Every structure is written in structure tokens, then in C-alpha cells.
Length: 185
Image (cartoon, rainbow, N blue to C red; front, side):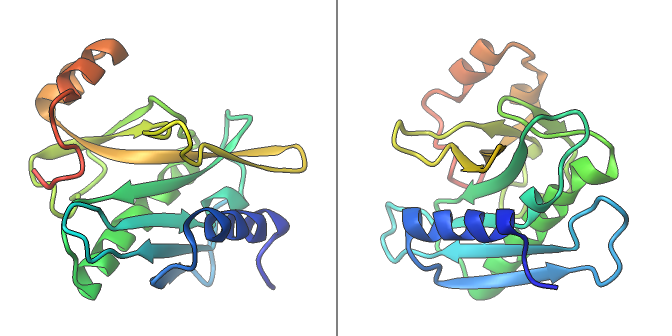
């Protein structure tokens, strides 16, 4: 069975916004649990500019609804580090596993949510959690609409214990001021 209309549209919107990916990785479960996406594609856009950052995106998380949410989601992850293919695949595996979390816990992801202990976050050894943020720039891809279904693009930001301990969004944003959240730490 081919990809759903939602997944095709999400893919097309990523291509329209970012261009063709430089590579992609597929993480597939031939027998997924009921209500869990069976395939997560990771698209990667690389860069040769040391001031820019490679970006990875999930495609497929939005194929299934998350319990308790009126929207669906896809994840984006940017890192200010030149990565080898194996390193991109390792980050892709982390994102693919993270994308399955809400389906396996009967929960959902949304902007401003945090997840404690999402597993080892490659290159972010001090991080103990992630924070999902809306676009960093006004023209950033925030949502994709497919008929009456809204897909939110959640930017995954690794956070340290000190940052995770801040429960107030305003305090957490202030703590991140002056920190390059894309540089491994």
C-alpha cells in the first residue's frame, strides 16, 4: 500500500519549502501496532556552510492521529555540525523513535511540550529532554493543511537538566537566550 494523501501532501510541502533532500532514510515496521505509523521517512538537507546547519525532518508521523489532539505532527531537527552519513542516520533513528512516542504512550506532541528522557540524543550529551517549538523565523514552516487535518511542524530542541527544571515557558525562553541551541552541548 502506498503513502496516504496526508503523507504525500506533507512530503510535497517539504519539497516546495526546502527543495529536494540530499538524502533520506527509511525506518519501517512491517507489522506496526494498531494506530502506530508503520513507516517514518527521515529527509535530510545537508550544508557545506559551517555557519548553516543540516536539517532533518520526519515524514510519516502525521499518517496517524495522536490521542487527545486535534492536530497531527511532524518533527524537525537542526544541528550546527557537519555530519557524516552515519551520523545523519543516527540522528534520523533518534527522530524516528521520538516520532513513535506519542502513539506508544497514548499521548500527543504539540508546540511548547517537553519530553523528559527521550533516550540518548546524539551529539547533545548534556541534554536530558527535548522541547518542541514553533518555527524560529516568521516565514518558517509552521503547519500544513490537508483538507480538514492540520499537521503542525514541531522543532525539536534538546534541553539540559537546568533548562528542563524551568517549568515556566517565559523562564525557559530566557534561559535559552544567548545559547546556540543548534550547537551540540
